[in-house]
Image (cartoon, rainbow, N blue to C red; front, side, top):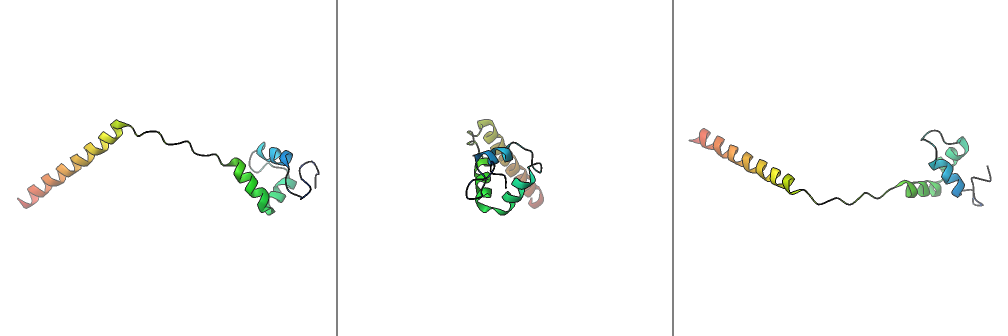
Length: 88
């Protein structure tokens, strides 16, 4: 094991994590990739670092709400008209 990538416990240190973050998926050094594949602690650390909270949803647009309401009313009117024609 490369001492510069691993800590005393045998897990990835900050430098090892930096190396992993700096490469495209599938291009990590084999030693780091094989360790990460078998170490749940390091997998958790990578996932915790890589997960980015989603930005909060903005306020819904008024025009979008009115459009949906209008479409629902139009559908209701068409349904009523079809019912009157078929029954009447």
